View 1: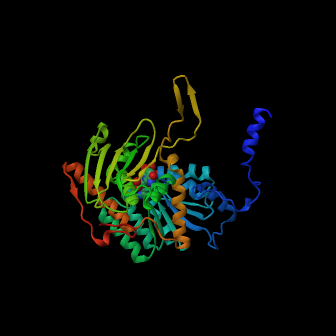
View 2: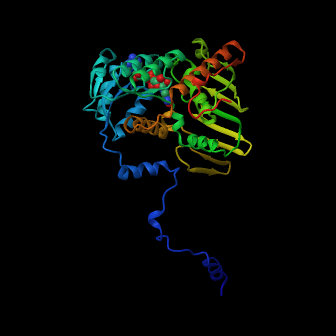
View 3: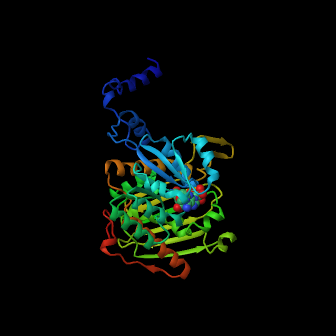
Length: 397
Ligand SMILES: NC(=O)c1ccc[n+]([C@@H]2O[C@H](COP(=O)([O-])OP(=O)(O)OC[C@H]3O[C@@H](n4cnc5c(N)ncnc54)[C@H](O)[C@@H]3O)[C@@H](O)[C@H]2O)c1
């Protein structure tokens, strides 16, 4: 027998049954959420609920991401767009073929609140307008999806949630990074003990492209506009709140210094269980939207690295390279934006428990305040927590 036939014979012993045996019981891995979504389009019973009638507030960077997801969802009927800049109306109408959607100027917002058929609002206007629109929408009996942060300071945030409680409607804060598949998978592994007790958890968040100065002037500042995402991520993964924070910050960019804000921030957080959190935050990275998460514990390390639009590799004698990482949040977090909207609809239609609660949002706002106070005073800030401030699923030892 020749050598090659002997090798074939040698592996023939491993030949199994026909792959058609049990073919119907084989399934994709649970992590393949895109396949799951594809399957659900055809098979999942979404109940007898008719589409949720929605008003979208704001057609800027965040609003346009939500607009495309709203239009793609069979679970939504977009009745209104409330947008202050009328120049955006016609292009949006034409581009998205919005024949049945009414465009409303903020002066006429009562038209939206008075529409009895409306069920929900999605607020993606500048942060300083959130509180007014949230209170108005809840007052009209509507469920609310609000872009982060809910409001500019902890007291306004509490006012919004008190209103939600009073009228018995959900107020969802869109911490979209929780819905990122890689970050969510890390959280679930940490919570099932895969790395043991967490010694160190780090996020890197460097923005791209550089936001406009007009945006930065009304953003609420880097702590409430950006650091809230990282603070929420770290505390959500750990399930506890820091008792001490320390932050240093600088303004590398003169124009940002000129508006009394920072563009370069480091935060450390000490947690009651002994874990340490670190945040590395910047308003601008010239190489793309740099988003990383790392968790280190006694049993191992978990990390989510940056993603690229494709995995093709270009090899030369000098080495190899890939496409640059995603340029910005609309592409990097495209999946997370879809998943957070699905979650909101599950809350509204199926009474699913809301994953981002009032206590979580208020705590994140309180920590962001403490971090900014630390950066401005140059001193660490201590934080005390009452039992009433700790959300379900979080433990404060
Ligand atoms: N989760 C995320 O990834 C993410 C990303 C970007 C922004 N955001 C949040 O989304 C919100 C909006 O930010 P943006 O970057 O889209 O801002 P933007 O400036 O790009 O867009 C805001 C839009 O709202 C319109 N507008 C302003 N005042 C209005 C009013 N009173 N009524 C109706 N429309 C009004 C503006 O004309 C503009 O079209 C902010 O709260 C921000 O923190 C979240």
